[in-house]
Image 1 (spheres, rainbow, N blue to C red):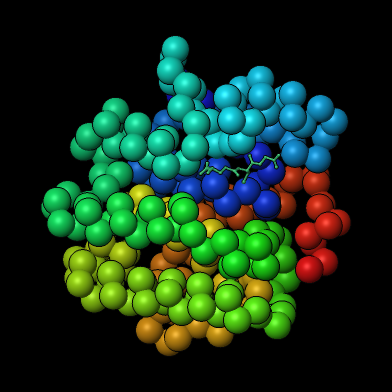
Image 2: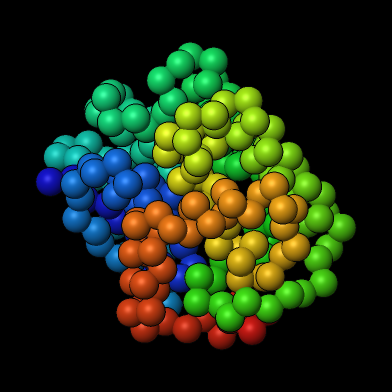
Length: 216
Ligand SMILES: N[C@@H](CCC(=O)N[C@@H](CS)C(=O)NCC(=O)O)C(=O)O
């Protein structure tokens, strides 16, 4: 069976993306959690991950690291699972917005630190964060308008693109960000996903409370 190595669920957006995708698409795997709060964190990460970061997917003799490589690996390994949208143009757009998330939005990621257990509370957003948010809202509305007619997700049917933006939904919720009305139904759809709810409820089982980020 495939094994997905992740870190503490409340604080782990990159692992969450792959975990959600695999769960929603019914790709069976066991999970291993590396506790980032415990001693020897670096050695424990390095023991499974060449980059010292998670997620890592172990599939027999194959090790894949970095969320985006894992998603591409899964798309090849399970070509009918629906990792990416079926039409070439839709797929190109999906890859573009996923790449934009993977490589960017650093201001948002820096200020709105992922904490799935956060009681919703607003903070003063830096202008760079507001700019990141506007870009994300544009991506969502534009993609839904152009590609999302067949269902409630970015490309109609659930795909890697939704998994990639799911941690953003959790941050918008946790930091009580004002969201345009047009984007709220999409947030609700993501938060209602069985895999999203399962990840959220697993967060309550995590023993680590990161004092550095819990009180931001
Ligand atoms: N670009 C990588 C980023 C992975 C990453 O930064 N993962 C975090 C967990 S969310 C990590 O492994 N952190 C290790 C640490 O905090 O030492 C990906 O997409 O997988």
